[in-house]
Image 1 (cartoon, rainbow, N blue to C red):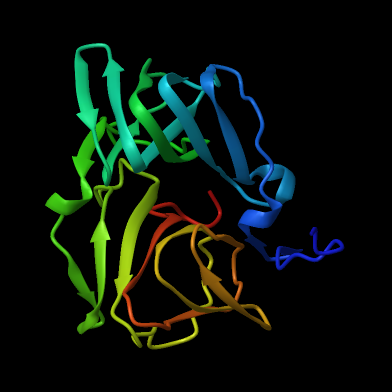
Image 2: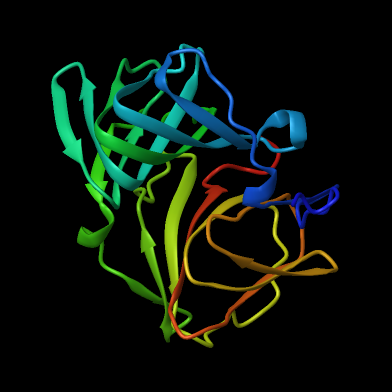
Length: 247
């Protein structure tokens, strides 16, 4: 029986908790044989867009067609082929790709697949060469212990040079591991839980998170996470990066 309008989803001035019971699937232009669940967008206060794409086998996610918009895709399940100009590569679970603005491309599902997609207007820097396409696999990225804590491993999926204006990482917490501080910073985040669960502090709210919960954190939102349970917790996290706050 439907739970009489109850949900744990909550949208506040500086954060959003988006839980699966509140997901709404929608078509998008240039998305064939698939649907999207839009989690964060400028309409909700974010400076970027993040959405889940669910593709049938043979489904296609084409380029957005929006001028100046760059894209990052991460394969959560299934497999896709990325085609772009002179590039054609298969991406399985944990595969990812960054596509610069104005580069024609398409992701075609070789089997049913779920993708995390992040899009944002690219911010160029004078005197800095534009970004190049990046294709990789999370498992090939060396992990780094955050603050020296071997129970909290970060894998950087994007290069760190100033030609790139955002970062995407995976963060994996051993059971019981936690951030060493409550963070408050100018960057905003888009976060999708991939495995396990725990407790997230968002502003003054403390929220259990698990499964495929999504979180948007606006600039200066107090934030903290601790893993709970008998299995590791892992999430994919975006942040704007490498640009002056006045830019």
